[in-house]
Amino acid sequence: MADTKAVAATPSATRKSKRKVLVGEVVSTKMQKTIVIEVTRKFSHPLYTRVMSRDKRFYAHDEKKEAHVGDVVRIEETRPLSKLKRWRLLEIVRRSALAPEVAALDLDVKV
Figure 1 (cartoon, rainbow, N blue to C red):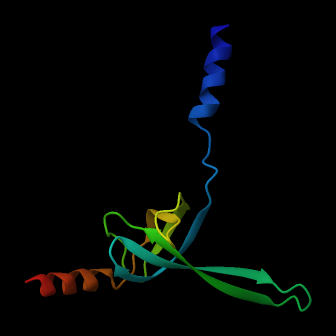
Figure 2 (cartoon, rainbow, N blue to C red; figure 1 turned 90 degrees about the vertical axis):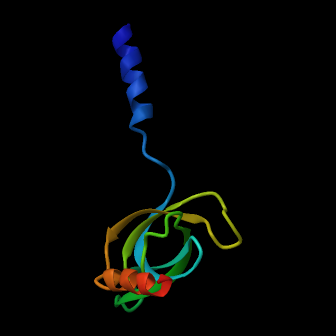
């Protein structure tokens, strides 16, 4: 009897989130705590069977301001935070080669 309760409790702990997750490149960080991510989707044309790509931009919340332009990031769907923001930054998948230069420029401006 105790085994069935333990088994029933484990799926809720390992349940996956039903929120959408996307991966894209940061194209703008000019707003406070907001980043703009461009997600590229590739698909085959229904008639000509040629691979096509479509870009879409998403506004995401970056609380700690840790993403920079050129970074590849993972974002997750969330409740509406503003007029355009419906996503939040989950993690930075790959840093841009320009990120150290941007950080150095920020330090020079503050001094």
